[in-house]
Image (cartoon, rainbow, N blue to C red; front, side, top):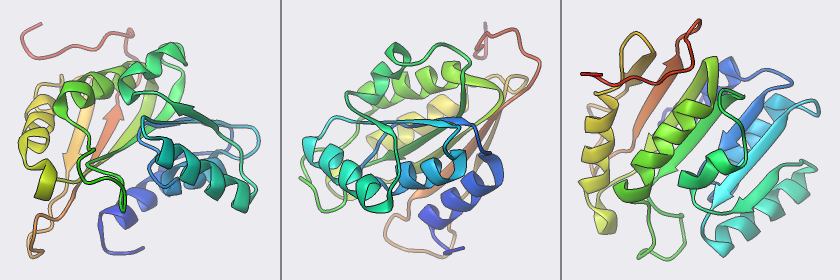
Length: 196
């Protein structure tokens, strides 16, 4: 495992995703998470990958073709993923918040769509399903999305979800934050927040 956020997320996915799984890469980017999910879910599984940027869609499709993998690559906002899957049918949802590496630095995710997308992903998860978030921040996209996501995740009902945040204590220059979420089993299909 690489000792960085991407390595931590990929190791988590390797331990959680089984053949036949239904997986969502909510922010396809260059397609690395999509390709990993395809390999883990196998031919019996299903992988959907979303991105709003045509360049990300192109790069993801090119990587999948090069590696002989198959996924549904969709140019749409991650906040619309519920239009493509019914509730509680996904085993895994993955996010990389921030911007496309090497892409337009003026285009990056924001809390306006990221928070609804997280909630949509949580509703799509089966009981026992998992979500992995890599939260990139700083630079052109600043800290607003990071702060909003972290604050929002604190409101998730602890009986319904377990949220683990990991920090790199000795890394400088705004290291990305890996976050892992488990949806508890045996729920009635409701997503509660504190105070509800």
